[in-house]
Amino acid sequence: MKPADVCIAVMVAVIWGLAFVASRIALDEFSPELMTTLRFAIAALPCLFVRRPKVSWPLLIAISFTLFLGQFLAQAFAIADGVPVGLSSVIVQSQALFTIAFAALVFRELPTPMQTVGIGIATLGLLMICATVGYDFSVGAFAIIMICPVSFAIGNLLLRRANGVRMFDLFAWLCLVAAIPLLALTLVTDGPQPTWHALAHMSLTGLVCMLVLGAISTSIAYWLWGRLLRDYPAAQVVPFALLVPFVGSAASSVVFGETFGPLRLAGMVTVIGGIAVMLLARRPSVLPKIA
Image 1 (cartoon, rainbow, N blue to C red):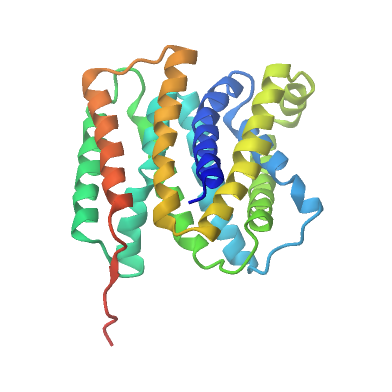
Image 2: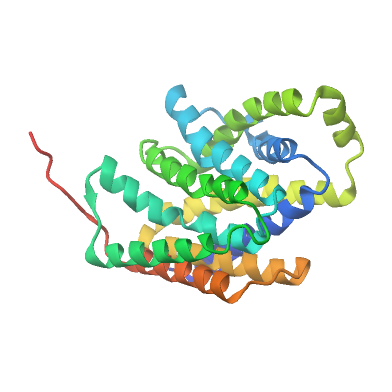
């Protein structure tokens, strides 16, 4: 990779890591539904200037509801319910484990021996984290945060079917498709009056957090990431995502004073190690279809 593109990949990982902190701060002011709605409404503004990509509506909705709506709404609810920011950033990145597992089931992509080892390591790490549940956040909150990597993985596989389209245009419309039902959900759960009151009395901190989440973390960062995946093999780009949980955990420790017990810290490191093995392994082979 060119040095400039390496810097872009690192910058995107840092942005995504810091976005977890911005989410936690924004949730002090907004409900999970409203925060997620604002995130995608801001990121969808480019739809005013770009055409809908040549992707069928059912596929566009399916990608949006898994890759964006399902993942980020569950993430917002989990963080609001007490899941630590640093731990959330690690669990979300375990999507690599579920992506490989679902690809094996749906596309018959047989994991390589090294990927199988990585799956085992990451699974062990998640089990170690499970053993710490109940001390500072509930089992229900942990179940909600686990929706994130599963939804992320399904969205990754669906995204394969949207080949040959401009990434910026696609992600903008994915955000629009997510923002509309999220707005309806917010009006039903929060109510029109409280929603308007939250928007009318938005603080400068809340505004900055939403601009970071919507314009920078979602719109610009995903566009840059899509460009890197277009210009380079995924094996060169995707490993940079391993920086996200390190940035998220470090930033959470500085901003919120988040600490990790020995077992949880060991579990987080084990998950990241397993993901590293999976991402750095060779691509899986495809099993022959049986007539």
